[in-house]
Image (cartoon, rainbow over all chains, first blue to last red; front, side, top):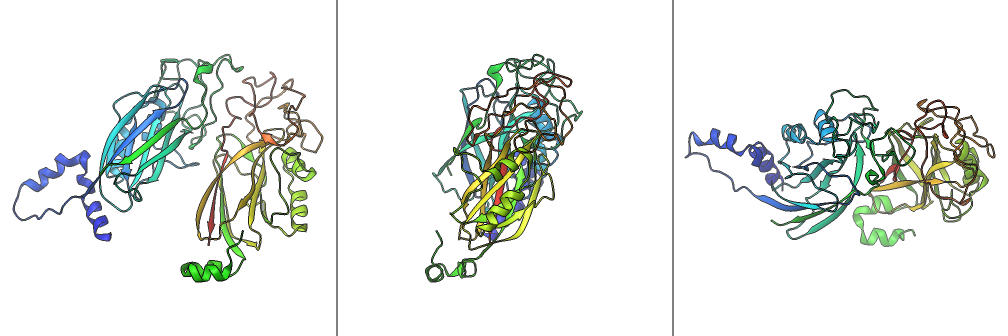
Amino acid sequence: MNLKKYVSIGLSVCSIVTLSACSDSNSSDSKEVVTPEIITQSFDLTLSNLSSNQPLSPLAVVIHGESYTAWSIGVESSIGLEKLAEEGDVTDFLAEATDAGAYTAKAGAGLIFPGEAETLELESISSDDLKLTFASMFINTNDAFIGIKDLDLASLDIGDELTVLITVYDAGTEENSELSGTIPGPADGGEGYNALRDDVNVVSRHSGVVTNEDGYADSILDSSHRFDAPAAKLVLKRTQ
Amino acid sequence: MKINPILAAATLPLLLASSISSAQTVDVRISNLTQGMFFTPLLVSAHDDTQHLFVSGEEATAELTAMAEGGDITGLVTATEALGALNSADPAGGLLAPSTSTMINDFDTGSNGLLSITAMLLPTNDAFVGLDSWDIPEVAGTYTIFLNAYDAGTEANDELVNGGGAVGVLGIPANPGANGGENGTGVTTDEANQNIHIHRGNIGDADATGGISDVDSRIHRWLNPVAKVVVTVK
């Protein structure tokens, strides 16, 4: 197992995301390198949006080892998480994961609307410390995101399937004002990412939205945008 | 139910050290998962099955009421220890702020097999985070529990911050975050369910100088669970 882990870590910079860059450096001299067999694991990830009227931004999915933690309760959000939670932009979130040694970092195809689901095929170098992290914005909010971090994949055998209900977090980077102009989703069409951090500036569980039908007249949200946890269902199947 | 130590020693030799005696030592980490609610001093109690800190669906005891309305755990400490409980009282050294954690190292549970936890949520009238009689595992390992917010059912949720923390005095004793309103007219004077039940949440309003409530509907709200407890059995 140790050897497998070593190989995985050694090859992690050559993971799917950066394969072309790595092959360039190896191709200059094709004879002397004995390439070890790359053992991969494959997974089908299906995410169902269980909310009433909260479309999900494109998924940001990361397979990684011990070297990466996407967020922690009580700890400041990274810039990547802030952009994901305020605007649904996965670019920096995935780049941060790759920089931290993640084996795979992949974006979903697009929005996942309430009642809909998306299936992503994932591939990772094999390792005995594989974990899954994903995040996605509830786009009719100021900075709510759903997700799970550090879900253990190492104990999944080929064919095994895992179902996990997913909760809702608050990135803590933008005040939950619910005001017109502050929410990027179709409920408002307002601003997405703003570098200003005018909330508690740590990640917590989300407390839900108030809405203009529950006594907060200035809210741009209506009762359809309310949510509770769990917010989504994750089904993960190891296929290889 | 305790595992017979002899049986444990025979069948689980690797766990001999932790099973040789019925006395157990555990680490307990408690995290406040909310964004805007404070926990008053926590009570973490290891006790046997003859007692509870609270039972959902039943009426609150006087000691539980004092904790839920005013954050006072002294009555619960005295009552539980009289029946053999071992307690960690106020491990955080005061309030446990939103999104923060406290750690109890080497908590000696003695021969008590059950773990219970309570703390009042501020600002509320009588909401509390609770764990009732969780079986402490015999097998060494790390166990995670998520806790919900309950309503003691002993006080109407008027949501007025007026210092009213004593039992029987209507009102919220304090808003530690100083981020709410004042001069509210009061949400309600009724308590529909007077037994311990799952809290419906604060109503609040966005009016800093009036309205029905002195708590902010955008800040002083929560969804369950409100706390995460990680117990490490050694």
